[in-house]
Length: 107
Length: 125
Image 1 (tube, each protein chain N blue to C red):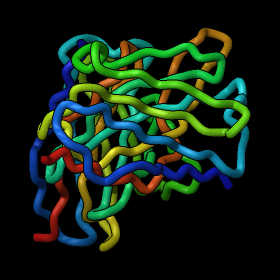
Image 2: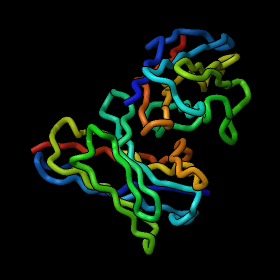
Image 3: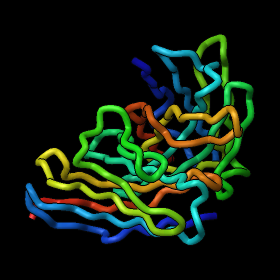
């Protein structure tokens, strides 16, 4: 099973700042089969990024994904108030697993 | 617009089988480019993938839950179902159903792009 480790656990930033979230895999993720989801309290996760760097439909271009192999990242170029949430990475190259999440909170 | 809605009991007793159904509207469960999955989230914790099914009935499961999980699809009712046996308090969670993108050329289950709102299932006597 591929284990995904997200860091940091919590990121404290102000609106307008840049956020960089990391997702490390215990084994190489084939064909960049990695997605990022955003989850707000009481709501279902929402797909942001798939195939490591492709934005899902309707996702603003301030969200970008990068990486390959075992190291991936999600960048939010300028945080908007609605971006404060928990973010999960997921690999679907070998079965499916999720990371434990990174909380982006208002500083 | 595709929509998914989970339904089932909110409270189940330990050792019984948990059963949930996900009804799909706004799209066909038999689309060759879709698959259907179940994911859960214990209160205050992260997401755990449970298993997935293609409309043909092909399934695959989280190895840690495989011995207790069954997923089925009913194309006539446009819904799919989850059964989790021998539940304990550790199975208390919000259970989500979701639609995934299926690569029918390579037979690959990919990302999850539509989610239901989730339903809380509590295991308690």
